[in-house]
Length: 108
Length: 118
View (cartoon, each protein chain N blue to C red):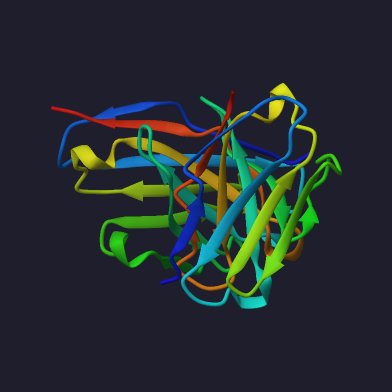
């Protein structure tokens, strides 16, 4: 099983700042099948990035993903109030499919 | 557009079973694999298993083997997840998820809260 470790656990930033979230895998993620989800309270997760760097439909270009192998990054430039939420990385390249423990992005 | 509409909240006693449904629309039902994921209160996301709506084939996370059954009804484009021998730590929101472009987990149901309590 691939274990995903996200850092930091909580990130406190102000609107307009840049957020950098990290996801490290215990072994290489097959085909770079690494996704990022955003989740707000009481809502289902929302796909932001798939294939490590492809934006899902409707996701603004200030949201970007990068990385390969075992190290991946989600970057949100110019934070807006709607961006403050919990973010999960996920690998879907090999079963069992696993998620990171989440990073909470909160308003400073 | 693609819609995944799940059944309503359930309250069950320990040892009982629950059956959660996920009715799909807006696409060809047999074209996309479907997953089930759960999230305990205040916790992260946990994958439970996958079903191929075309042939009905399934694969379950080892943790749930023997307790979970995933099925589909092609006449109503609906998938089902039954979890048996419920325990208090099965209390969670259960989501169905449709696999989309490049195997990504594109569309999520709204979630079904299952509460296990005596």
